[in-house]
Image (cartoon, rainbow, N blue to C red; front, side, top):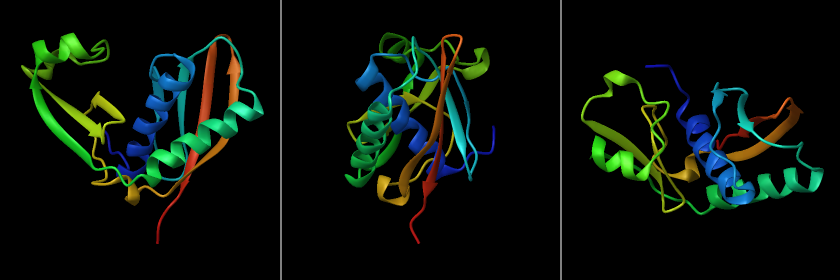
Length: 146
């Protein structure tokens, strides 16, 4: 398993669900999650406007500030197939799938560590976005709680 930063990884879940809800796109198809700065790539048809970037950051921070519990549960592979996109699931995953939930906001198959509550994440800061050849890249960092 990769070494993930629980705060940053939990923020990635919220970013992904916010992109789905705001723009109707799929979750990121590629990401690089590190403690200091992370990035997610989305199949997209255009760059984001400055107003959309601001709205995206605001919505993500609203979700974080709701102090949502982050939980996990195991479900069967057949249950997961009917509810989730499992394209990126490794073949050796077995008969049960771990679903990580951020309150009622996001539910996603995941193997990485997460915070117990969104209050532990800190403030989401959108560093920059870029668009090239149908790919929107979002770079972000966290201002972490003391």
